[in-house]
Image 1 (tube, helix red, strand yellow):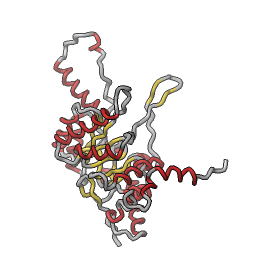
Image 2 (cartoon, rainbow, N blue to C red):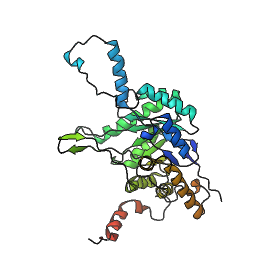
Image 3 (cartoon, rainbow, N blue to C red):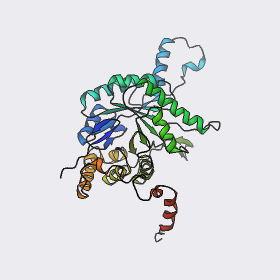
Length: 336
């Protein structure tokens, strides 16, 4: 029996549910070819950051104002240097165009930021460059004590609506899990124009260097344990929101992919696993998925997708409060 692994995400028909999410592996056309050759059914490009867009605008302004130097601080500059970034806006747009031309799989561009700013204009330009879809990677942490949850949510919705009004290609929104009413927010994001939801954005946490007494970045790759959060919410949202559902964070193995598909994910996105094992790990995961489907007599991914969602299982509350109590009761203390 030949198992059909095809799935549909954002209206795009994909050969498998295995998508390479934004990572350093996709910074170059060579890296993107390697991901495609390894079996990725689609690629999400590393994000174009809001700061890069602002820096690009600043560069234009600086050129126009060259020689003005109307105040002392001008000589030192106000924005950080971006030489360390691999791409600027123009380079990024060129990468999208070239990837779209050379790859046989969908190329999803990504914008990372928290304000409307230059997003709308660059969303239009990425569409013109040939992006198959656009992912808004909304990275906003409400640290102002005056910010209300209503204002924060509206900020997301306004951003999605503004971009949706600008482009015709499919639009996905990658969000964090920290909304007090996640299900309601998911529905409102789709009503604002999102064709898909990517669950969840993994906010990187800073650390403190004890010797230098400096706040430093500390990037930690995900682990399979982090799968539980997107698994739970995809199972809850399946069939309740009119949007494609993508799972990211904690996807490392064929087993992880299968659990997410059963919960209702349309695609699963891998980053950390590919950084650890290389792009060729996609084939290992694909084979594990195929073998499980065959051994359990499934004919296709579509046949099993969502069969363990909250709406489909005999005990829907298992995804909610009762599971918390049961987990505590059934936990066994390990020998120490």
